[in-house]
Length: 377
Ligand SMILES: *Cc1c(COP(=O)(O)O)cnc(C)c1O
Image (cartoon, rainbow, N blue to C red; front, side, top):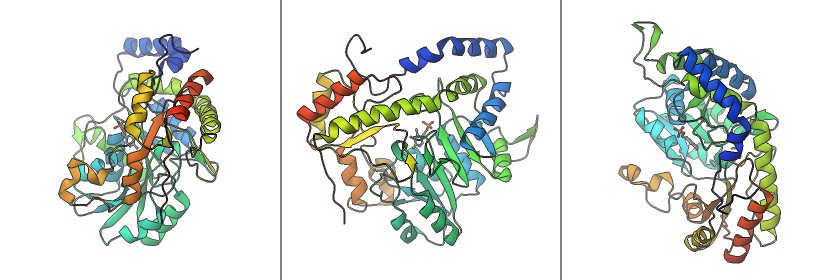
């Protein structure tokens, strides 16, 4: 059913809430009754279930996706003097996590999949490079085969950021099971979202697992015994309880996103729009359904006039954000990311979006938007 007020949000969490509402209420009541708000049994249970889902040996629940990235790199001993290769076109937290450890993000332009360009990774490597961060943007997989080869050749670690691609598979393997470590955000709007901030790290390395467990909990091995300088970045029991419930729906919710995306593809193709790229062998999970349009500001206005909330992910490439002005990277350095940031438009997509809603969004685009094309050498 279309929402009664006919507005279409970018992400409507209500349909998924309704599916789990009764179960979520019971889970919350049970955590409250136990009063085990921190380190309750749901935390370990979720960690086990999520590790099994991603098919890694270990999962460590943490406070947010940003914390997951930071703790992952800290566990890889990345710190002052080190460099980490990061895509220029991604969410800012990817670079901030590097900077907060005192290391330096080295930006690389994107490929035609919006993910880090494997062709450009090697030229960004220096003697200080410790790791490459592959971000699976919008729900599409980065080129893990080539990134893995480059990392092996240069003895670099691979960090996956799966905050936009929970449940996606690449050649049959879940994203998050390719790198040395994988960071996930469970921010409410993500494909797997908590009722607040939450995150996790997945890894097959027992040493990394042990380190992150210490680092997230003030370096405690047992009460009052702190063996390293740690942080307070735990996943709390209420969030874990909610995530356990939602995890059981993730595959079917992702399937709903894929079928909405197929409908957009078909409708928009007729008007000359290019469907979002999907990497060969990748089962895309469409955290965002992104098209490229000319004159985006006007198109956003046309959508907004009809109650449709579109958004921009991400409007400014990281090297051009004021927070990184001190690096002195001029506009023009990463042309693909820069041009793409000018034209990308994320259309409403979420589990439970109706055909009628998709049709309404598509018809506004067909009537009022002109597709943008980027041609790169
Ligand atoms: C959401 C997101 C993050 C940050 O997650 P938080 O839980 O908000 O800290 C990191 N990386 C990417 C790619 C994201 O989309």
